[in-house]
Image (spheres, rainbow, N blue to C red):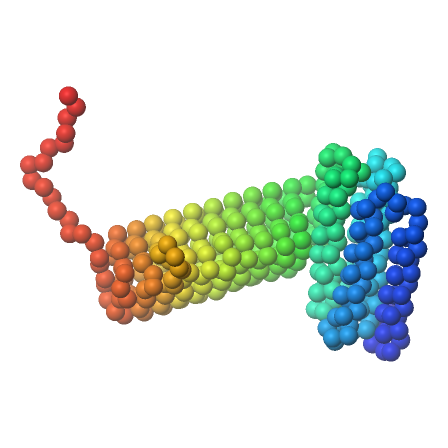
Amino acid sequence: MSTRFILTSVALAAAITVAANSQAADTALASSAGVQGNPALAHTIARNAAAQQRVAADLSRGRLSPQEAADLQTQVANIYRAQAGTLETAAAHPAQLAASGQRLTSALHDAEAARRSDAHADRLDRMHLHVAALRDAEQQRWIAQGLRSGHLSPTQAAQLERTHQWQHATQLMEAGVTLADPARIDVRGSLACGADVHIDVNCVFEGDVKLADQVVVSANCVLRNTEVGAGTRIEPFTYIDAARIGANCRIGPYARFRPGVRLAEEVHVGNFVEVKASRLGRGSKANHLAYIGDAEVGRRVNVGAGTITCNYDGARKHRTVIEDDCFIGSDATLVAPVRIRKGSYIGAGSTISKSTPPGQLTVARAKQVTVPGWKPPRKK
């Protein structure tokens, strides 16, 4: 097996040979009777050719070594051939669909073994994720086509999808991930996990998701195109879209991250907090009931309950800057554009529309008045 990774001119020739052999095999498959009346199969063959061209382009640009390109082309060709065979089975023998899902991942076993044994593990990891994402996208595409064309019934499509998800769960557990229930996880893209990762039930992972060592994802969470740092805990019912989360953070429960969120280490974002297009520095906290949008939050900042950044004036978005070591009292309204300077304290219930001086308490609210002799109205 080790000789496969000796980068010589023989590997380049192997890459070219694999591409040629794959193209010849697909040409023969396209001319067979199985393509007739099966547009999904014809589409699969076309997608294989496009994938092979992308690998060849990466090889020519130096993004892949010759041996990596040869390995990747082999895996891509095998995956598409497995799908083509499954589509032919769908047309002729629908009852065999559930078992045929096993063929979709068998072509990845060699790549996984190579990833574990080769010294260039990082580059092979990227190759493996590329193949896995390619497989998942094609899986969803041809299942949808099978439903539209009538080759698959809704029951058969659901059975095939569960078989596919069970394969994902099996691969994760074999890699050391702890799943509370392998029957209740959905991976709709690629999921890369470090050591000692724990995933509770009913979690959905979409796009490219990466979980570092000792990450805990609690029940009923959705993560999309997100990276989570080591030791971070995501509490139940949290939705995270296109975020980069640092190490040892605490997120949720019931938190929502919209695209563009970047958290440093040891940040706390608690229940019913929404964050959008914002950066939070190390050790900052927004533990409950807040909206942080289009903001730059420094280190060791405390954002009180009910705080909002008013980032939209009806026509344009504006940014709020909160510098290090600030304390934002509960129910504060920060009207952007505004800067809360280092060490500022904002009194609870204040509406801040002007930048504050550093290290000072700023209060902006109506004076409290007690009306003597006032009586509540009475019903007649």
